[in-house]
Image 1: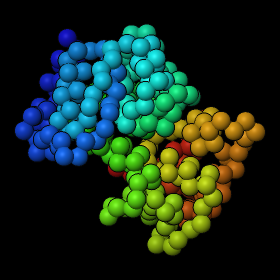
Image 2: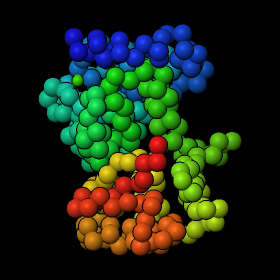
Image 3: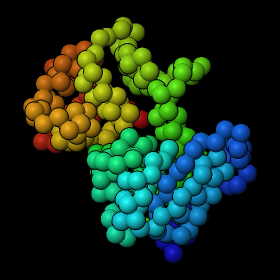
Image 4: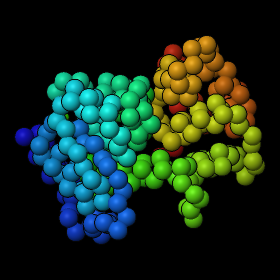
Length: 262
Ligand code: CA
């Protein structure tokens, strides 16, 4: 029942006449795993992923999704937070730990207005989160962007550049270079990864332990103090006044976020 409401709540974009959603069989986007137990949402997401060229495998249960996700690699995983069996957050974390999809693009569907779900989803290893109710155009755009972003480094150079620009910072994801107020700055691997994660999710607070997990992976010798140290170094490179940061902000007692200037 709730699912039907969610679907209907986005009338402007839930239309099958979207030009972007026309079948694109000439350029198959690959295999997608869709984990969602609500039939209406599942049907809608499946339809639009298929129209966008994905070959979609549907699963309604978290345990079953973990089983399949450990064995078979997918080009995209779309998963809901609320699932029977293992919940979406846990599923995401477990798939990131081992198996065929440790680096698969993951798009998490989170509950309406639940900022904390969104934060937890991103911290748990999802690459992006989409809040219900969502428009299908946005769903397809985000899914396609994730897949593109994921594939680009493994393919030969294309005419596209993958850049993120916010405030006075621009980062090039392929060259792994950064420009701050039009000046090139040299960043270490950790500094770049940290900046990329924060700038990709403006306004979202990441806990230190989540930053450790995302940026340092499973390295056991680093501590949460390491995060503070690298944040300080990064601020010296990107802030006008590192003592009074305006871009990389501290969430006291929690962690860090990139300023949300919307
Ligand atoms: Ca659900």
